Length: 99
Image (spheres, rainbow, N blue to C red):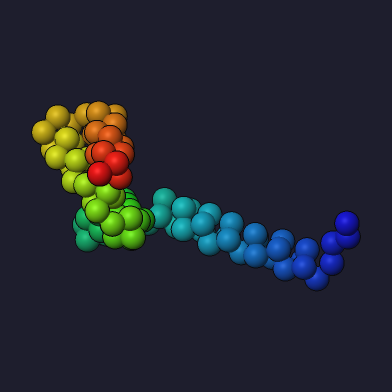
């Protein structure tokens, strides 16, 4: 197996660019004092990312996935136990698929 030097160079440059962007953001945020708006925005990023990743799967999965999502939300709201919520969500998906 041989590796084309141009392809290898492209891969290495893309890796260096990706690392530079990520490390640059990390070092920049450490050096600057964030504004209250930026702090509030950063607190909402994990939730927004979670919804952006999970919602398409729920919509594509149809009724079984929707039933699982509702079960997870209800269990998390009532009990607050993440593991129990996930187990009930999986059980709801399995039950909805069985019917």
